Image 1 (cartoon, rainbow, N blue to C red):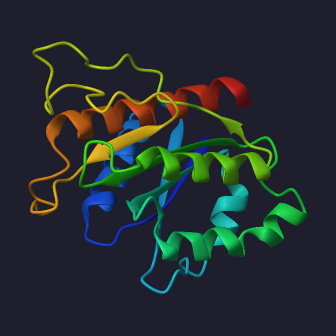
Image 2 (image 1 turned 180 degrees about the vertical axis):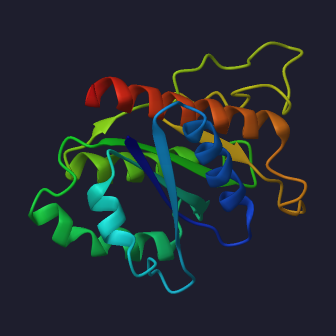
Length: 191
């Protein structure tokens, strides 16, 4: 069985919705188990969180983008991974990431770059989105990869939208396809 862990922080519920969609996509791949680990409001993982991450074949990171970077709660978790880093516990595991913010851009690339750097410090093998952007005149939020991402998953939740309203269907479908891709690549690498 190939295991995928998704570790994320969600301040308002939108990023959690993305994490669940990524998990649904990964879990749809035969022979793949998925575990979602939510970083809490104090920046802490559940009691078995680090053991779950250490045992996973792939770790997908997720954080909302706040003020051009990851939420402080996610950053606190990331800083706590230095013990895992020191012993190379996540070396050669697959790594991938997603972020959500209210704006189409919202400096999400800075958060994605932070998450990529975290994965690279741990020696992980990065998997990007792998989808063409929806960039035609008639493209819109209902389309797959409307945000035009490549390095990871970018989703949009307008500031006045509840988690019931956003992210929109196109972003959630993109999230499922992303989770599926990460799971399939991990299975290939783990042979």
